[in-house]
Image 1 (tube, rainbow, N blue to C red):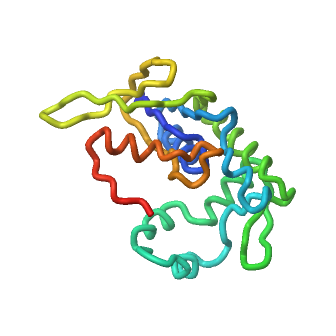
Image 2 (cartoon, rainbow, N blue to C red):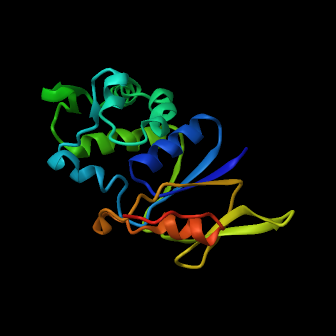
Length: 195
């Protein structure tokens, strides 16, 4: 069984972990905070504005630049599938003015709880208070190849693959401190200037 590590348990990390587990991998989800989905807890003024219920083409039209970049992602897992996943996980949703989708309860904690149920359902191992500080690589044919991660307590964890979902630098208090940029640079990727 393939072993996959996911760094960051925000919305992207949770969804990546679920997709990998659903595909048959053993998944470990690492989060340096004490809870998963910390940033989701503050979106929509604490109500968690999940998505928009409009047609996908209309949604893409509202993207200001480089909408082609998002095309395959938006069509690969569209807004209706997001809603279906949460409702099937026990979080009823409602659509408000402007086609904005929220949990019926108006509590982001219900969205987070639904996603936690899905993580348990797919047996994702969630590691809270676990900060990954380094992506470990080994040289293969002169190229760095992923082989594991090192955590802040210096524990090294080997795996087949890694998905980095650490977010940008938008909300340091939620854990978005730009770790992914550092991981990318340290493993030889080119990182464009951030604005």
